Image 1 (tube, rainbow, N blue to C red):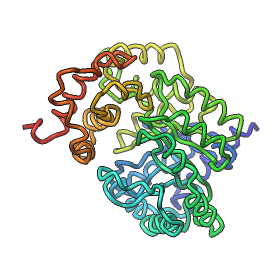
Image 2: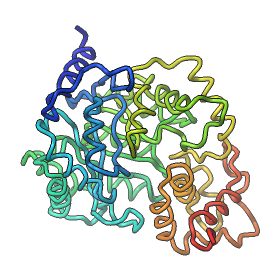
Image 3: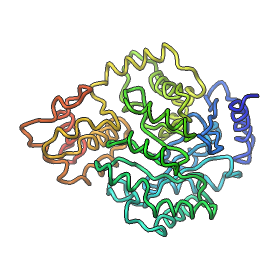
Image 4: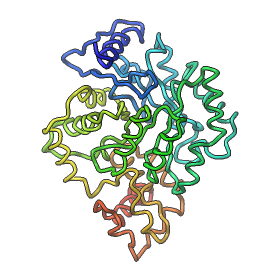
Length: 402
């Protein structure tokens, strides 16, 4: 039996043990379950190819349903609202903690919108350790399988972000947590909008991180293949996120779920990718995404992606691109504002989007009365940046909604 087949069959059988009740290893005709598990670098973890992003998880029961359907990797964070508390609810029903993988972040449990949730330069070793210990208390578990240095590249200062990436206090805290058995692996993530690729190349080359999580989808990311090749060469695992390229409506020409499943299969056709994390908000999301697990990417799938790109290619701000940022004389953080717009319009996360936009304060306002529109034409993908920013202000402020 091949290693991947062994991992898959073992993980499916283990699902029945996790919750302490009988669970069929094969899916029923009425539902789709995870069909494939893949090695996460050299960690020894065989992760479900489609895994659970818990940024908007509504309850512990959805986590249990995901486990029942074969998902064994879960991504959460202290600044994802009540997410870690919901894991605490679920943990009371999970009989074998070792059969699932839980990753959280070096963060504070304060709203993401305040912009101070990520632990940064100046954080002490004890503060890093304390953040993880508080996560463990909220989740009712003795250890994390991984802790992330999260959201590298959110500020446009490459040198400062490199220092955060390799912060001596963070690395010492990670070693202390590993020795105490409270953390097994150190990981790092980036969804841009600044310097995603150089930061991830730095992370892989450093030798400190067991795996990385990056924005990756069928829209073009010119330097990501370089990151994937290096990670594979070094034995560093790669998890993809932001896989739906904005998750906009795909049009009546496509059947329900056709675009979403095609987009996930496109990511998973890359052997360098260990798996992907996508946000699950409901049982319906399990039904929508899991049919792509273990499936081959086909010409029909490519046609669905081409259709989506034709509809939305000039409205989707590529995560991690940032090519337009130097075009604004007022230094408005265009990519960040358009990411919040995506959360509002496409992810259904209106509250978080509006709070995040409000936290930018005056830094988001200069474009409202701008007559020069120097950003127009700055996007290599054809976005009308000025119009997009005005649309974002309309959606993300109470005055705009009035």
